Image (cartoon, rainbow over all chains, first blue to last red):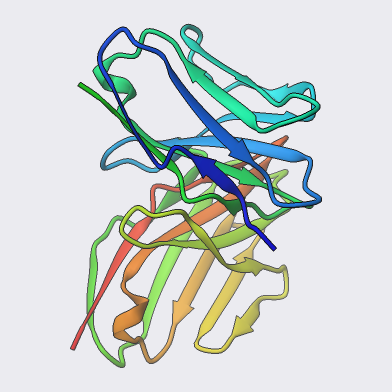
Length: 111
Length: 108
């Protein structure tokens, strides 16, 4: 009865590198949400995906960020050419209907 | 105006105290409301849903006032283990919007 699984739990990148964060939703859930929590701030919605579809990406920065949820495999949040301001906790959540269940998060540190 | 606005914290209370958190939301079309709890910036965990008629779960009581677009959480007989950040959450089309959170610290 695994919950939402995220990896890596911690990721260190140098400026300009790429970060890939993975999320597998709870069994039976086909909706995935990504949220970002900057230091000392609240959770901000980034993107909502279903299998092979981006439903709402209104919270995604216009550049360098992309997300996918392929037919097979986990959802991936990709950050290209990372900058120090990308350092944050990235939480993935899945939902049967309504409430969200979160993974433990991936903490990205950009040096 | 923020979509979801919470009382600023932190709230420092002694064990056994009753504490209330308030939250307002801007979207009158919102239909689903929740309180989440976040410990030390770990993953948020669902504390309780908030129903129109108000609902109670042990020491926790949630209220909703649709006319005023206002949600509250009351914690009675607070325990040391209640120390956490409490997040007010409101649905918007295709997403849930989180408030900034209110930090609670319960002291012995």
